[in-house]
Structure formats: C-alpha cells, structure tokens
Image: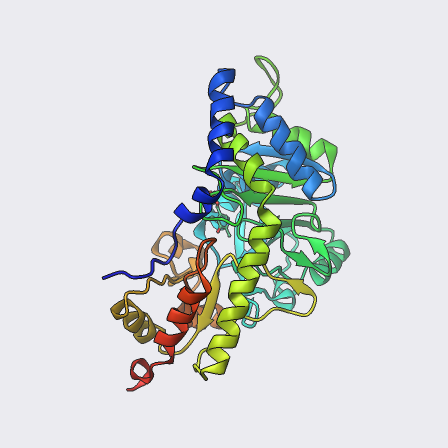
Length: 372
Ligand SMILES: Cc1ncc(COP(=O)(O)O)c(C=O)c1O
C-alpha cells in the first residue's frame, strides 16, 4: 500500500483554493481566454520578479526553449552544446528549432553542464550553449558567461526546474541572453495545465518571440516570418499570477525540507550521496536527488515501505533509441551514464511534512536494502 506518494499537488492548491477560485472566476466573467489582460499582467509580474526584462507567455516549456532559440536567431544546421542528463524536452526544443544538439558531460557533483567539456566541444558551427539548471541547482553561469563571451556564442538558460534559484545572488533566467521556463503543474511555479515563458533583457528578441508564438503575426493577419501557435491562456496566466506570489515562500519550504533530509540521512549514517549546493548557489530543490550504486534496490525497498520514488532520468538522451542516429555510444558521457544508473528522487513537494521526511529517512536507515 502506498503510504507516501512521490508527489501530491493537492495540499498546495488546498492552501490557496480561495485565491485560485477567484482568479478562475475572473477569467470566466471576462469571457476572454487566450492572450489577454491576465497574460499581460502575469508577464509583467514575472518580469518584475526577475528585476526587469521582457517576458513572453507561451504554451509550455518545450515551446519556450524552441522560441528562445529561434528568437536568438539559431536555426538549421547550427550546433547547440548541451547535456544529455536532462528532460528529453531540452533536446526536442533544440531540434525543433532546426539546430543540432551536441552533448557534453555533466559535473557529477551538481548534475549540471561541465564547462570545460563545453569549451572542448566548440566547433566553427557552434552557435549556442543551453545550460540546464537541473533539479533546482544552477549551472555555473559565471564561467559559462565568460566562455560564451569569449567565443561569441549565445547563452540560453533552461530554467524549467529552477524558478527562483540563484547563482552568485543572481536569479536564473537573468544571466544568459534568453531563458525558457516551464509551468508544468509539478514545477516550482506550476499552472493547472501546461504553460511556459521566455525571459530576456533584449527588447528585439522578445518582440520576435511575441510574433513567433502567434503564427509569426506582427499585426492582425500580417506575417513577417513563419511562426507557430504557442500561446499562454488566460486561465493559466491568472493561476500563475496567484502562485507567483508564493514562489519564494514555497522555495524556502523546499529548502527547509531538503535540510531535514540532509540532517536526517547524515545523522542516521545512510550511505547515499546527498545533493550538493555549491557555495555560490541557492538551490531550490525542484527535486531531492540522492545517489547510490544500488539505486534499484533502494527504490524496491522504499516501494515495499509504501514510499514513492522516481528516477530523473534513467536513460540519458544520447542513449535513447529515438536519438541513436546522433552517433553516441555507451561510454560517450561517463558521468552522465553513471548518474543515470545511480540517482533516485525522493518525495519533495509543498505539503510534504517533516514527519513524512522522517518516515523516508527511517525507511532508508534500515540496513536490509543494502545487503548483497
Ligand atoms: C529541464 C526541462 N526542460 C524543459 C522542459 C519542458 O517543459 P514542458 O513540459 O512544459 O514542455 C522540462 C519539463 O519537463 C524540463 O524539466
């Protein structure tokens, strides 16, 4: 019997049900459902949260990344350096923009892009680096900024898992040329359906993305370039406007729960590798990921205890059947492949209690699962 689910979105929505209902009612009463005042208001609030810049609301995080790339002028045949230890969506977006993903390994301590490996992968065809702030931990943006500047590359941030995370005090999404966010319901800032946004300081890039998300339209029925339909709807924007006000509080709660996991697991001497937070970083723990060479045994044990876990991600993108034509082989990215074998995500969500964290720690402290 499942006593603790991996994730549960009910408690967070129960906490703010009144505000959510009012927001939904407002949209119903307005009779306006796609790209309207709620989207504009959310775009302004989300930009203000990031200290300025331009936000363009779109249909989901994958589209946000594709539009960020297209807005930045990256297109067919151009190489984009990124990681294979990410949601496959990162790669879908690069290919949908027409570009060629070039995979490099991760720094195994933070699970984010290895900057030296990225530098070594640059060719005359390289146009951009997509840094993925995986699990809520920022990539090493200061080194990436220097590299991108030196090499004349665009630096693009995939912030789908890291709303509100910081590197050297700066919010993710504000350190590259352009950034993409997902508002999938489980994200640190999640809608009640799909949603996404592009954030940039460059007015012209934002204007281009604004056109591209709406069939490439610049004025009604006037199309300057070929676009797509990727619009944020009013209901999701109204909900996101409510939830944005809680983002910092929710992230603080995730950090508190992560600290409870850390002290509990260390205190009990549970032999897993804990997530690392670089001293320059403010981790927002979208996921609480530990690792152990016998990860599958640990998962089976927790499953027997009724505790849900997931693996992000068991097959790295370069070894997925769908991407076999890209020419990578087992052994191409050793740290990525080892992480894929060893990582496991423990329950982490708003509404998870300290007692439930203790329950997971208690279950992991049982010696049985480790025995040969
Ligand atoms: C790292 C990363 N990039 C991109 C995406 C794509 O977002 P969406 O599911 O909203 O398209 C996700 C979400 O799964 C993600 O985790």
